[in-house]
Length: 321
Ligand code: FUB
Image (tube, rainbow, N blue to C red; front, side):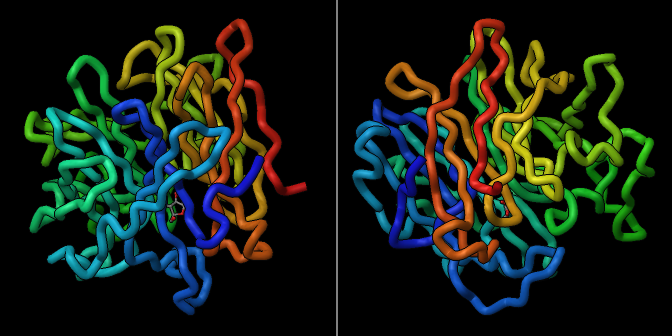
């Protein structure tokens, strides 16, 4: 494994192939001086760059520069976290989580004519949006947005898509865990076309993973890909630092837990994307080795991802020993 952008700190890579070229949409870490806390205030990012590759062997061929800056987003408060980009009818749509002026995470949409941007933000956040970590999956002209993250990602503040009056509720340890969400996007790609639904993660006995099962329950970093007709929902377990996956028969799930894709890396967060490019599958992710373990200064990596004959994913060793 090697670092893709050795001269800067980038994290949360969302990788996609557009027009035969691989594009990476990461978060852009920097040393903002904000104290580290469980709320993630130290992830104080203020812009996005876009990177592209002709092939993975030769690494990043181009840094296309700043594609979106927080100062150009009218409703911005702070913290541009993990975004994603989708393509429809010659336009590229970036979905980004950002705290508004009341310190509530919402999703914004920004539009470009080219995959590398620049992306022009819409004046307001998506209606009814909340929490963090957008991932957009396209199939047969339908676009599904997966999202959510607990703790600093604020997902525990919502039930049935409504903000809770008392601020936040976590289920008891033996109750079903808080679920990520999925919603189809509208034809114009600017709003949810439906109420977001919970993405239910089950164990092999068909029971929902519980909140106390923190080796397997969802924390943040949703990603969806399809392989051999199956839907693979992958995610981070946060405080236990695994990238795991669960499989299902349709984009809404439920998904059955299958195992670990990536064991813990150096740094608190672990976040990834999975993409097929030129007949191989890749795991893009980050760690904090180059910054000496400073968890808010992360660096991009890529490694090949391999499947077994039964469709299970071979576990990749992360950089934490
Ligand atoms: O980069 C900020 C946050 O850290 C992301 O949104 C989370 O997934 C975690 O990687």
